[in-house]
Length: 243
Ligand code: G3P
Ligand code: MG
Image (cartoon, rainbow, N blue to C red; front, side):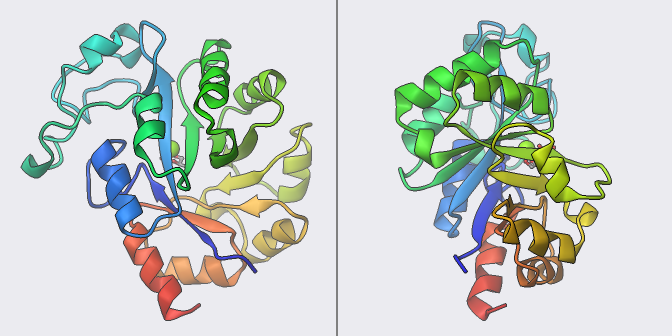
């Protein structure tokens, strides 16, 4: 069995301001093999890394991401809300994250925002242009968006995010109609037995967002391919203790 992947949710969101370079770099220092981040388009069509559709919660500004240009988004501080030691962080572009993260760190790009084809085209362009195709995994709750991306860039690895009560997770993956690299279920909505079944069929399972040590152990014992966690350091410790 390969080592389960430690995937830092929005970086190390439990200990740093989510979706900032500080958070991503902390996740790597804590031993994450991968970081998860959320991407959407600014008003002027730049791929920017932020979870909510407004900047209100995670910056000192206000407004909808889709109504602000990159230059406007960059004016606001994205670290101060979390703690003074993070002052000066800004909303990163996806290109900046690709440049700053170690080449071997997998980036799980989660598509948020509108599904009009523009985001998917820009993302495919960046994946080809940055040489990151091999080390990126694109996931979303918007499966049509992933399908669009697959049509533009067939080699991209895609993961299905879901919160719903799925009876047969393998059939769910097959229903996508194109190759599915991984399933990203809410961790309370997939049975331990079902994790093992999916993994035995070659479908990776990365439950989110798993922060408690006991939950981590149970899911890892069940064969989860990795976990998406706000605390990559905690997961590393659990792995080091042995599952
Ligand atoms: O990608 C897993 C997880 O991040 C999905 O939920 O709301 O944290 O983006 P959310
Ligand atoms: Mg996310």
